[in-house]
Amino acid sequence: MLALKLFLVPGFLLLVSLAARRWGPAVGGWLAGLPIVTGPILGFIALEQGAVFAAQAAGGSLMAVVSTVAVTVAYAHAARVARWPVAVAAAMATWMLVAGCLSLLPESLALSAALAGASWLIAPRLFPPAAASGPAPASDRRELALRMVAGALLSLVVTQVAASAGPRWSGLLAVFPMMSIVLAGFSHRTQGPAYTATLLRGLARGLLSFAAFCWVAAVLLPMAGTAAGFAAAVLAALLAQLATLRRRPRS
Image 1 (cartoon, rainbow, N blue to C red):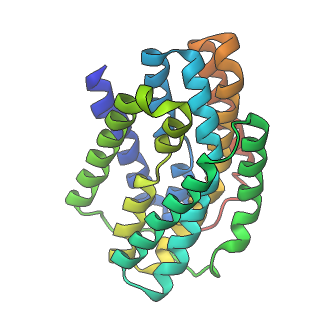
Image 2 (cartoon, rainbow, N blue to C red):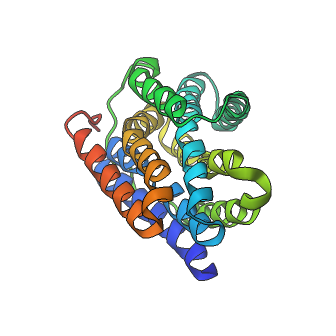
Image 3 (cartoon, rainbow, N blue to C red):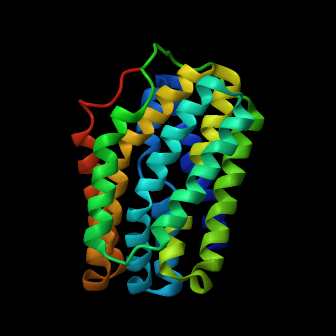
């Protein structure tokens, strides 16, 4: 189990990074919207804490789509007027504020789904105007290593504190946008704000698949069990991703 935690999540992050290098930031961000980090984390939680606990955490993760959208929008705007360290700080402060507010709301899957859907629908209107941006040059090896290490640490920390943190904050922490911030920070530093905004706009668009995964997992895990519940959630995520294929941002 420990070996899976250390290698599975970073492996997904590496694939997304390589996709951004090959096909550009819009595609890389769009793929990053998939539940490539939260999915394995919720799977580990289900194995260690049970399907019911994981379903509650999935509901919390669904609510946190709102904070993830807020972070991507905040970073895209901050990158236009500030260097990457300031933009990173602004994005993290935005997450803390929004996630803290969300943690005060009543636990309701219907409310989580409504807020997630509303934030996804309005996200394209909140980003700065799009600018042309092409594929990125080869990423620095240290950047790729940092992304992978951060993903491993995130999965380890969340699964270890899940029981004490409770399902609501476990779900919120499962989608703490460490990966988004790392991707944005390095992209901003090396490629500039236009490239970064394109990456984050694509990520926000891809969050529909993330929301579908979390909603189906929250509904089906208690009734269908871990294997069937996650299989259905993965299928829902893939179908949602296909639904956004025509509408994804161009590189």
